[in-house]
Length: 293
Image (cartoon, rainbow, N blue to C red; front, side, top):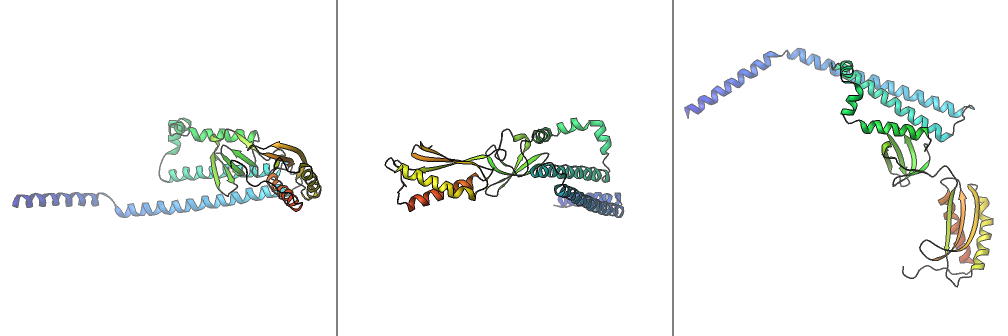
């Protein structure tokens, strides 16, 4: 028992001695002053870069607003918004790079020596930046070929919506339900742009074999004459195609109309509602339940 107590006492004494040596080895007042000074410099540095970022974004915003309002503007509004989004994105990355560089320098890290010694390109690849480089290259060609612009209605992979922003690394698509999707540029393989050409709206009216087709045809033509002038977004049609077999295998009367991009669904709903209302008022019944459904 005495032996165990003696061993414990010796261990405790050794620990106290080591702790005393540790405390005496460092100048804690100087260390505290150094940490406080570095922390203060870090806060000032961050505030400075935030101010630079805020002022830079304000200048860029003002410059693009002035260009939009000027008579010299020859680029489309969507294209201008795309370039605006890209410039802001590049500016943000530049500010971030210099902030990190200044922060590392403040911490005493020889950034310039590291870059010169290892080679920034080899270092970037070694850290797994191939995806980042691929994003930038793909984004560059998307902009160069004008595959899409901010405000365009597009379908990319399984995502469909409106282009919100185009950056160096990602493209932002807002779905029609409000979901904001961030798509890495390297994942963009097929772009279906729904805003470049006139869009087709197909309107189908399901009928039975014994439905009075001639009467409904007359009603469709009358509705077209009344409704078409109310939709200036219509670029062509409506064109009555007559009787056909719909995609689900049922007999239907089809009408097609071409509209400006993004308006095809509004026009489709308006014309279909008008057709059905006029047919119902004429006392003609249409099928609502189909065999096998």
